Every structure is written in structure tokens, then in C-alpha cells.
Length: 393
Ligand SMILES: *Cc1c(COP(=O)(O)O)cnc(C)c1O
Image (tube, protein in one colour):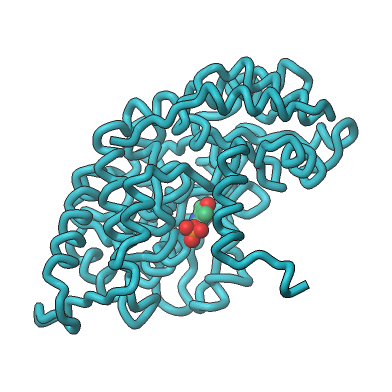
């Protein structure tokens, strides 16, 4: 067995070939431009650079790395119009930890949207709350409308006076009334944190919750879902006092080395978003709507008709289970047809938008037929043949 197994180098090679022949509909992922991948694969991936509080770098040979870091930080600040940007977090989850450590103490209570309503599992009792010693109370939420129940939220927040309110969801199809939430937080003395992990690229492109940073004390999230990659996280604020705390909660607390190759790749991707973000995000929103409508019209039940989604996500309904099997079965059937989707009932349009697909009626029919059990592999080959990479300089 050992002898027959390909070397890891061959396996990686095969994987690259496999990805060229499949269509990716995973909402948590995005396509990497070749110049972003180039930066990831450089010598920087083996280096350290750490500027100490007194300004001295703890490592040598770091001048160029510091310049790359500063340029990336500048690009992120330009992209979001933020005064401060923490670009080192290794992922959205680490960015969440850093943001919470900077705003709450042990035994404090926060409010967040429950997992049942699409909230992030990390804020549920067993995870960050147990690890960091805080408590999560749920924000009243209407699943059907995909909206916070603002009146009930105001009442509950007034009683609890949470130290922080953390918005953002992993199943995320509708923006919030942030003006209203800000007012409530001001009354209850709560910091307002916005976990934009899924939608950072759309926020940058001003097509989903463009007011996220205007109303929140901290906007943070992943750099690889709707953001152009690489995998990582960022924390943004306009508040100097918070920026200092955020800075203090990175090195030796939530992480050490920030992976300089990743920071270089992030700076390049941010530059692409500065150039193409608005057009990209506009395409995402229209692609999502048309794909959702086409699927729903063809008999695949999509949630929240007739508006479906304001983001890159399409949420399939459990009403499909009887006819087409559960989400795991549907995902497997799609995978056998070279269409990659998660096993949670989400479809995402970030990557198909990056490869320039705009005919969502044809694509919707192909995906629908695959869910219904038809063999669509040659039609996927055709779709991929007509694709061309977009939004890379
Ligand atoms: C994906 C996600 C995270 C975690 O992000 P990583 O980059 O995978 O660490 C945090 N919060 C929300 C809402 C998410 O969807």
C-alpha cells in the first residue's frame, strides 16, 4: 500500500488538476489569483518579522518584510476607509477572539445570534464562551424574515446590558438595521462588534452592509470567503483606544508568527479589491438572485422567496429532503457531477463570479438537473470551458 501511494508532491499536483475540472459553489471559499498564490509560495513563508513595542525588530533581515507589511496595512485601511487595521490574525476565528478580548472581561455577557438562526458556532456556549469565560445570550431573531426582532432585542438588551453585541452569521443573507442597533447599544453601554467573515468582500465592494464600520466599534472577519483570499483574518476600527487593545491581544496571546507570505498575498488581494471590488460585489448580488430564482423555479426549494438573498449565499430548504435526500446526499450527488457544495444546504456565488460566469439561468438548470439525479458532467465541462478569470490585475 505504502509503495503504491503517490508522494505528497504528486498528490498536490493531482489535486490541482482535480480543482481545474470542478465548479465550486462553497460559500466559505474563493478563488485565488495567480499573483496571490505566487506570494504564498515564496521565501517569505519561512520567515519571522516582529516589531517590538520599542520599535526594534526582534529578527534580522526584515526591512523588506516590514515594508510589505506596512503596504498591506495601508491597502486594507484604504479599502475599508478605516483609521486602524490589524492584519495579522490567522483567520476569522482568531480575529473574533482578538476582538472579544479587546472589549470584554471574564464573566461578562455578550449577545449574539444563535446557531439555530445561522449564527457562528464559535459564539455558542461550548466554544469561545467556555474558553474565555464569558456568557452568550441570544439576540431575538425571526428565522422566517431573516431579521432581528428589534423590539424584543431592545427589551432583552436593556435587561441584560451586554458588554458586547456581536452581529454576523455563517448563514448570512440579509443586512441589519445598524442605525437602530447602534442606538440600542448606546443606551445599554454595549460595544458593537460586526463579524463580517462571510461578507468582507461584499462590504469592501459596498454592496452588502456598506455602513458596517460606520456604526460598529469593530468590524472583523475572514479574508477568504467573499474577500479575495488568502485564508486569514482582519480587525478594523476607527477607535484609537480599541486599536491599542486589539494590538495588545495579538502576539503571545492569540498567536505569534503572522506568516509574512500570507500578509504579502493579502496586500495583493486587497489591491485587486480596491480596483475591482464594487464591480465584483455587484455581480455577486445579481448572480445570487438569478441562480436562486432559477433553482426555485425548477423545483429545488430555496429559502426566503421571493427575495432569496442580499449576499453571496443561497440557502436550500429542508423541503427538498423528501424528493432529493438530505444536504449530505445532495452535496455528494453534486460532487459526483463535479460541482462542489457544502453539506449544510448553502450555495455560494463568490468563486463562480470570480471565474466570470454570468449566465445563471443555464448554470441554475445544470445544478438543478444534478440535484435531481441527472449526469451533468459534460455540461460542467462546457460551463468551465466558457469561463475566464476576472478581477485579477
Ligand atoms: C467562517 C466564520 C468564522 C471563522 O472564520 P475562519 O476564517 O475560518 O477562522 C467566524 N465567524 C463567522 C460568522 C464565520 O462564518
